[in-house]
Amino acid sequence: MKSIKLIIIASILSCFSLTCLAQGKLKIIEKSSRKQPIWLNSTENEYIITSAISNNIEKAKEMCMDNVKKSIIDAVAQNVKSSDQSTISQETVNSEIVNFLDK
Image 1: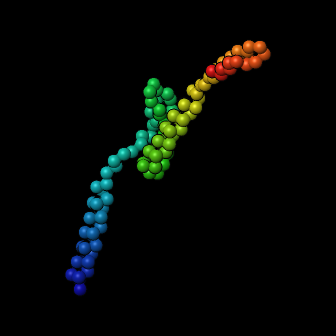
Image 2 (image 1 turned 90 degrees about the vertical axis):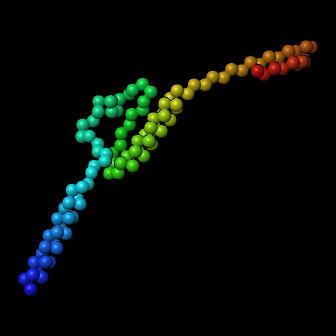
Image 3 (image 1 turned 135 degrees about the vertical axis):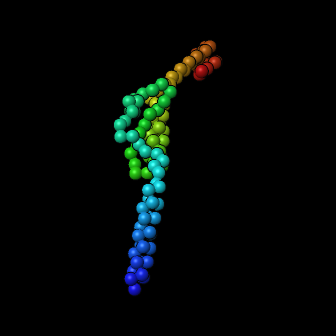
């Protein structure tokens, strides 16, 4: 009876220690820094710098890409310029229009 209890306790302890060892092997692949870089939310030549906060790194990347797209749209919309020029010429002979050009 004592040996059965001892075997059960030993198996429970070994399972617990294996679980602890398995949890110790977790490795952080990507992690954000607590301190923001100085270039964040600033402008750099030929770069669009954005940031996002999310529980999932893929979601944060998606949010950053959306911010980049918005920045590009804003930059294009602010720099749109247009001009229009029209020239009308009319030639009349004896009070009748002979030639009418709209350029």
